[in-house]
Image (cartoon, rainbow over all chains, first blue to last red; front, side, top):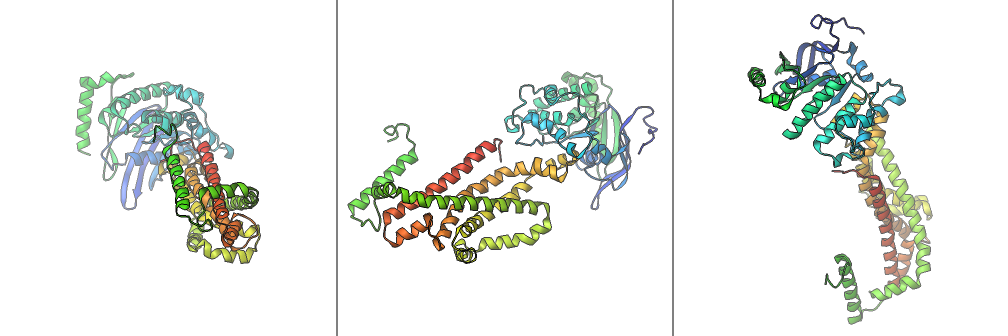
Length: 264
Length: 250
């Protein structure tokens, strides 16, 4: 089903669109009538207090949970159609690798699933080996997950997410379990991958600096019930370097988001 | 002592020491050999009765292997059915538990009555003794898939069949092997118990025969052969595990 381009976005193609989307768990309303358009190719950071529905929003878009009310589309398709067409990929907080598979076999997993049933899978023009190179794991193709560090495992998970050439990448606190040095490094790598692939990214995080450093926009959600509090444009040029965090502009965004977070 | 032994590991030194002590005890107190034979008597019996021992070793090995295969295959298949159909699990799991509570020694005569004195009864008893630990472990193994991996499978639109082959089955292997290592030795127990109840060949028959004829050295030699059989079964499973499971399992 084709959705008319939304008024807010003008001529920019829309990656994900929510119209009055509501998600309820028993009596608890995790997401309450959210309407939102994510432009194709954009990088959104998603911030908000615990229980504001950040993860739920990603799970709603990725067809892991259904909307109780409202409509969610991904590139004009229903979330189920988009899932079957592999329009999106998901990166979890844990790398979620299969421990018996080597790094490269973990990256290949999405290519092995669904083919026999005639699912038409998009395939990245980069081979699994090239994707591992893209995430900086050249030479570790045959390592088993337990032989890799936490940061390396998460890189494998990112390479796996890219293997079906997703147009939308949903990331649920993917670097939350990493130490700060590794996290900084992964942030830079992710921005590089975003610019090289042109994929749309929705990135859930708990960290205000991480949200500002990565995103073109920060989507601030509020809890009880989960709603959009505000969308803050981050007007800082790419490519971004770690030193950006020490600039006055960065600190101003940081202060503003912290104040905003307190009102959520 | 460690220095004198060179590279010999401590457990082996200990075992050798205990055997020497046993030899000395039997000789020193002049214990009649039909009550407790000296290690040297047992060694002699092992050599002299070797053809007889081997003649009875093969049937027991065969029964144990068949029972091991049947019992574990049955347990794995039923575990797969349980995991995919909760109604089947609810209906049959209590029965499996009940069968497990019946002592194998108590049920063995019944099985011999049903299946006769031949191979079948021993295989069924050996299979039965393997069955339950493998069933329980395999169900746990197949269900030991984290919710996040299931979400990944869902995002990839994996079918039940694909989830089974690509995720559930490999992740259950460490659990399966834990059970197979138990079954490797219990299947031998099952075969021997089966032979006790009624058989004309096998290590179990020889144990009964040697006992009632006061051939203590031969009895001990037969027991050694039985435990040797268990060790070979266990080692085979352990080697297969090492080859198949290269990943770290918590």
